[in-house]
Image 1 (cartoon, rainbow, N blue to C red):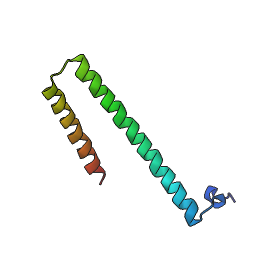
Image 2: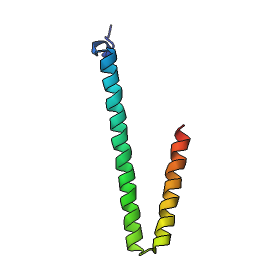
Image 3: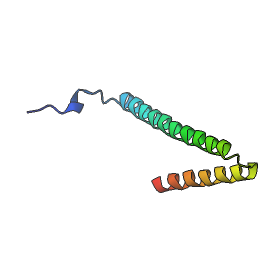
Length: 75
């Protein structure tokens, strides 16, 4: 009979809370990386196309709306 791989883990409330906090932090880091890359791509687009400030602001508003819609779909 095979032993379940989770049998050797520490299942104390403190250990579970720590694992949960680590998972949340990892997800936050991943999301921050995605948003950072997207902002960098937008900055490159704005610079390379030499957008006027109002066009750049509109592009940022559209991106904010897109991110907001994606977040709402997760709930």
